[in-house]
Image 1 (tube, helix red, strand yellow):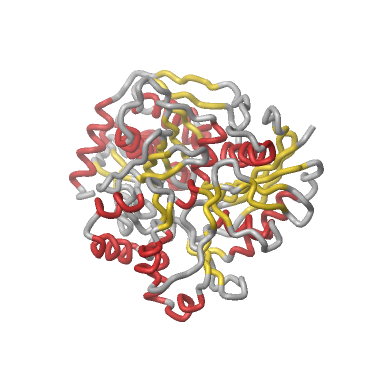
Image 2 (spheres, rainbow, N blue to C red; image 1 turned 60 degrees about the vertical axis):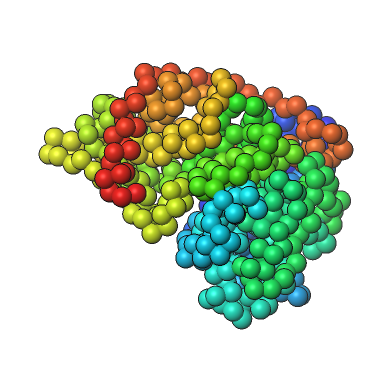
Amino acid sequence: MPLVAGVDSSTQSVKVVVCDAATGAVVREGRAPHPDGTECHPDRWWEALNAAKDGIMDGVVAMSVAGQQHGMVVLDDAGQVVRPALLWNDTRSAADAADLVAELGGGQAWADAVGSVPVASFTVTKLRWLARMEPESAARAATVLLPHDWLTHRLSGGTVLATDRGDASGTGYWSPATGEYRRELLVRALGREAGLPRVAGPGEAVGQTPGGVILGAGTGDNMGAALGLGLGPGDVVVSLGTSGTAMAVAECPTADGTGIVAGFADATGRFLPLVCTLNAARVVSAAATLLGTDLDRLSDLALAAPAGAGGLVLIPYLDGERTPDLPDATGTLVGMTRANMTPGTMARAAVEGMLCGLADAVDALGPRDGGRVLLIGGAAASPAVRHVAATLFGGTVHVPAAGEYVALGAARQAAWAHSGADAPPAWDTGAVHAVHADPAPAVREAYAAARAAVGS
């Protein structure tokens, strides 16, 4: 049976799944860690990828890489990395984002041009930061790539410079509506022209490894997850990883001038409106550390506490925030009394605070037309997170079986590239568990009031 491999090169680690090309059944897996931080030399990703796929690639005929979005990788004329990549969660370009938005005439001008209003996460803002803060490095930048582009380039032996429309849509200089680069926006940021990867079509094979393994175009991590889940019209995915995202597949491009919804493209030829928060799973892990406990016990504490945490509300901007665009914000605990300062209410407030912002994100995506809310990511394994999510997302959430959906999406893309078909293969995405709970609108009302009170 032909096998395909999918790579999820995320902020914290790399995961590789090897799947049956016809069914999607996972037959082998590997993983390796990435260094912590908001910048990373791409060589570390390459070393981790080689460690993760060591010994599991026998029989693989095609592979694709889904990578963390927005990261800035700049190469010189010799194809060498100029400086460590700035990652999506590096907020030092916040001022540059504000300047770029103003220079073009505001958020709606950017949304009309490229589908999204750039914030510090976006590649275009990092290029402006590079030009402003490291002009010598900017002068050496001959080619600008995204993390998944660079890994595909390395896998090809240095012969392929290609990306896909999904990941390109997060740069701030490619338009999902027209399918073209807006090179004048790249020049506005960097101060001059630079080379960019070719944008491959959905399902296209862009090259081969030196060993003859077909390479799919790859994509961004959110697009990979949507493809791995088999996301359908009306469905919304809430992903609880390092960042939190809410996303839905759409037939038409989005241009939200407020900047709340990013108008991305997906990996299939459609579109992927998405809302992203910087603070997700790390909110509950930080709360567990504060309480001197582990995640399982934190879940028990939160479930034992009442909805609304006795009036305690956490505004969870522990690492700044992307949506709303508050890169310098910090977290705030509101409503503290002697009665509610207990481990249980603290645990409940952490879970509710993380999820209230994402409930707002789901609402921003618009009507679901009867579709499901799917909950994925590491924090979705928590019983408390599942229960509280159901209370905040209308009474029901659907939790797919645990899986590496970003890597599975990349593997499905690789199978598509290998087949040469017009559509990706139909893979069984497995059972989905429905979690029901009584809706708790008062929790979201208290969160909105607390956020307004602290001016965020």
